[in-house]
Length: 199
Image (cartoon, rainbow, N blue to C red):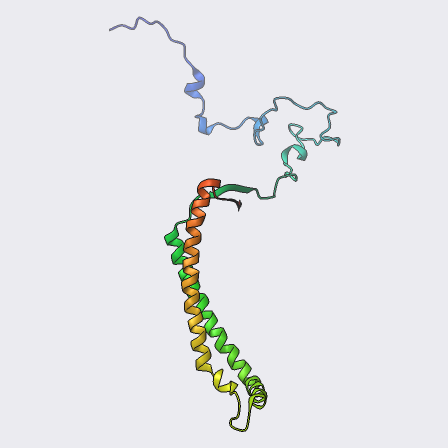
């Protein structure tokens, strides 16, 4: 076969020159590369009213350092929701009122016992009982005995009876109040509440 392309030009630079990794850097590129600015500042321009700072591109600290925002909003926002209590479940109202009335009855019994002990330690019953005995006494009897009538067992029994009555009445009244509220809410729409949430 014969070569019909004719004589081809020889590229001596590629044949005899060094490889790309073996070439020495150009004399003008010894430092780091700085890209040119799109809009170079004029010679007498100032930044922010002060003198310009010299450099490869005329960029000063006023442009390189960003100042923090001082007028940022720091107050938290409050979200509000307006709700309406349209119906109260009588069964749940009865359970809650029953438990609360039991707790109130126990507190009443304990408070009565503590108050009786404090008054007995201070001598109130003996002093008042002696005065009543002298006032109601006669030749046939010594009068009314207040200390025997207001003994601790009697006070606790009387307070317990009051607590049981309170439990029954409070539970019944709360349940009846739930029914009445449901009837009134059907006419006027119920109680409106405004709930707020802080972020």
